[in-house]
Length: 491
Image (cartoon, rainbow, N blue to C red; front, top):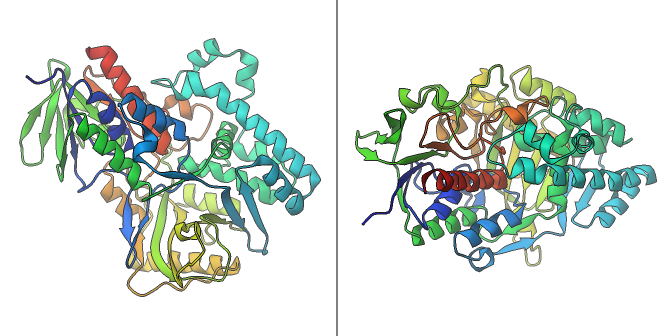
């Protein structure tokens, strides 16, 4: 006898996988994924004789996964091996300057003292205290809630506490008052890009990301894909069924509520509950059929988030001393975001993030290593052209910028794979290449993001496009909230 209700999950990203792991303990769950493997934006690409993460690379908020795995009946440590990093990231500038940030705030303060002076070292310590308070203010009434609510924040926190999260100041403006050295402003302003936004328009509330990283950055054995695989395995052992290479063409409705899905081959699968783990923009665009076109409230005048141009490669091991996570800052920072959000073009001098996993254990290192490189870019929806010529121009701009910062790259033949915003748009329908959904510009943006319940009974959402927002742990929280909502509504 099948369990009731029958739940169909569209998409095996982290949000869908988290929900599947939790719901499959009690319900009949089937997950349809159009890709050949689980993970969503978590993906790996071959670079010669090995693979490298080519999506999210930074694993934080480990407690989120420990709790989800425990609720699903398994211990996180038993199935995922993760090693905490001493160094959060290494930062480079074109003037030859370098700054390391550590998991130990005292050690980071000492590094900042040597880099920018005693005043900014003290400013950094007070900054850490401020970001911790913002995080604690928002965690329970906002991040762990099933939908964003200013009223909930007002009732759960006093007005003075709300003022402390700096919702009306921009991130760049707040950092300009905090740090004297403009390079430190750049460094901490970069956290706006974690949700695809410009630090010149995003709220200062995003400073809380600094606390999230300070609380711990881990390196996952087997890469971030290991987390997706572990969630898939748990859901499967709990009874869920996964169908890959399955394109859901329509979400069906009957009597005003979700009733199932129709695949591209016209097969129909009945369901009592449908959970969509994809970009909400696909619903409003009618990509999943007319039944759910109005299931999610449209965000008028919302700004699409930025996208990215990425390269994976194997290179001759450069002389520059890289860490696992590295950032090479542009000396035209404002121009960079103006280009992406206003000029709708890739920046001429692109700040570049480099993931170098082989630097974790340098002893006995090979003569070559794997690298994942990422630069900011406008989404394909912005009208930017990503022809072969344009991509070559972007690669040259990145290589020239890295060289100016002291890093000379020599990619090995046949190991380079480039991914453009147009490629991301094809991989993630409905996103149009905007990897983080809508940009978090202005204080209202976070409260305009939809929750896990839709306007249609029996139809739910999860993933980085809904509350609490983009990022692996946030997507997992959305899946957990969706599972809780489904249990509350249908048990």
